[in-house]
Image (cartoon, one colour):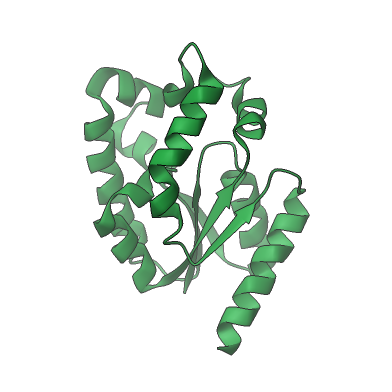
Length: 170
C-alpha cells in the first residue's frame, strides 16, 4: 500500500512526506521531481514554455508510473486531483491524504520561492482562494483532509499515522 499526499502548494506535502516515509519505513517519491527529471526543466519553465495542459499530461503519465509502486509515500502536485484518471490510479493501491492550509498560511510558506508559477500574479491571496475553490470538490474525494495551518510537521505526521492505523483496523 502507498500513502499519497496531495493538496495545495505550501501545505507541507514534501516535508511531511519525507518525515512520514522515514517513520513508516517506506520510500519517498515526488511526482514533481520525476517530471522535472523526465522533461529536463523546472516546473515553472514547463508552465512558461509548454503551458499547463502539457504539464498536466506529463503529470498523468507520472501518476500512472508511481501508482504501480508499493510501500511508497507519494508526494503529488496539488492539481493532480483534477483528473479523475489520476485519482483512480492512486486509489487502487493507496490512501490519499489531502493537506490543506489557509490562503494566508500558504502564501507565507511559499512567498520566498520562485517555484510557484500559479502564484506569479498581482494578488496571490486571491489566486490561492480561487485555486482552493476550484479544487475543493476534488480534494473532498481524498481519504482524509488535514489542515496544517497551525500544526508542526511531527503533529501532521502523527495525525496521518493515527489515521492509517485506524484505517487498517477496518
